Amino acid sequence: AQKITQTQPGMFVQEKEAVTLDCTYDTSDQSYGLFWYKQPSSGEMIFLIYQGSYDEQNATEGRYSLNFQKARKSANLVISASQLGDSAMYFCAMREDGGFKTIFGAGTRLFVKA
Amino acid sequence: NAGVTQTPKFQVLKTGQSMTLQCAQDMNHEYMSWYRQDPGMGLRLIHYSVGAGITDQGEVPNGYNVSRSTTEDFPLRLLSAAPSQTSVYFCASSYQGAFNLGEKLFFGSGTQLSVL
Image (tube, one colour):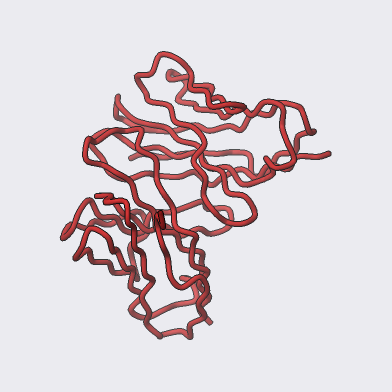
C-alpha cells in the first residue's frame, strides 16, 4: 500500500536561506508521481511541483526544486532563498500509476524568520 | 473560472445530526475526491470518484456516504454526525482522462465542521 512519511512536524529557516523539507514514500509500483502542495494560513491548497518516477531530471519550479532519490524512495522539497511568504504548511503527496488515489503525508510546518 | 466550489464554509452540528457538504467543479474533471484534514495527520482520503456513477472508498470512509450523479457535483453526506468527525473537509478534482500521473489536484476552499 502506498504511504507518505514526513518526519519534520516543524522547521525554522532564516529569511534568504535555503531549506529542505523531507519526504519518504513507500510503494510497490514502478510508475508513480510525487507532488508537493503548500497550505498558507489562509487554508487554501496550492500545487508547487511534480516529479514522475521515470523523470531523469529533478523537477524545478522557480525557487522550488525536488531532490528525487528513487533508490532511497525520497522526494525532498528544496526551497531556495526563503521568503517570509513561504511560512506555511507543506504536504508531500503520491499517486500510483493505474490508481486514482492521491495520498498525502502529515505535513511540515515551515516558519521563516526575518 | 469558479474552479472547485465547496459549501458551506463553516458548519456546527450536534451529535446525531445529518448534513451534506456540497462540492461542484466547472472544469469537466472526471476525478473528484473528499479529504479530511486533522492536526498532525495531514489530509486523509475519505471517498473518491472517477466519473458519474462511479465511487470508491479511500482511507477513512466510515461514517460518510457519497454519490456522483453528474460530472460536476460530488456531495459528501454525514448520516449521523459524531464528534470524531470534527475536521476541515476539502473537496479536490483533477483531469484523469489520459491517466497522466502529473495531473495536479484542484482544491476547494474547505469546510470547517464542528460536531458537538
